[in-house]
Image 1 (cartoon, rainbow, N blue to C red):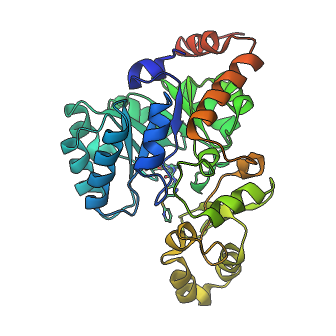
Image 2: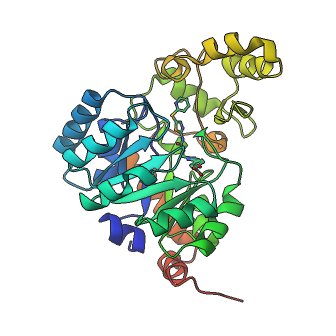
Image 3: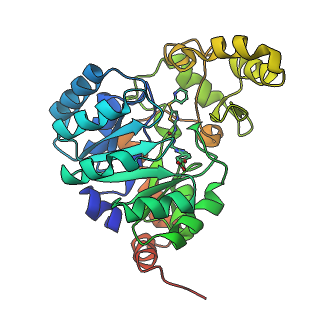
Length: 322
Ligand code: TUI
């Protein structure tokens, strides 16, 4: 299936795997790329040696394009930005900030750059700096989130820029994919739906929590501190929300946050931050990465009466239908 997103990224299906920090390594990323989507190694919170090792491992598993994600709040973001040039990664996605400082370096290295944005203003800035596409990620997503919903954000970003928009946040199946295309997207980014696939190496207790979740089971922690993170309701997130109401608890709150994602990823799903999007309530199967990619595209195609590519072509022209 061709859209500007597949053409620019050199992939076969316009499905990008969301970078899930401490979760998405070589195993998941290579499986998604091998299935024809874009697999993305999440570098957030990881040492540089781990990143180099995962890129090498993924390259052994697939010769198809491969992405890496830079979490811009990471203290080692600048070193990582340079390392990804040396490793010859095909695509960089970024999150939780503006990658302005690194854009020139990446473009010079021939890397396709796809910043995740949560507003039209940042999307416009990224286009001016040479971004190849943007991911418009709504607040339904898991992990670090912005304020706007996917429903409001995709059309707003689509109107603001000419480069392709990849919709994200709340997309877990073909219906979500078709909806994103109806709103102006030419590709989708999917995170939560990949959490439960066989190639995802997160602890099984984490997968089970996602499978068991219902639609209202996520919550956003850290809104007050400026680091809003969507995760599943559990002992950890309920305690955080409680402490957030009381300014005198700042120290206890900070202590609770330290290592919270690592704890969850390693299986402490009551005491850690089980990051997941609102669509956790829609995820009720495990399967493989290839099944997720194939089914999503097939379902969106069927639901759209086979006109998914035509919709993407209209979006590429920013066609006004009124
Ligand atoms: O980055 C994400 N999601 C993430 S990163 C992450 S790692 C982490 N680990 C432990 C604790 C907390 C986080 C987990 N989830 N998504 C991409 C994303 N970026 N969503 C929203 C944004 C965003 C928001 C505001 C991007 C830019 C922005 O404004 C920047 C500016 O300067 O205007």
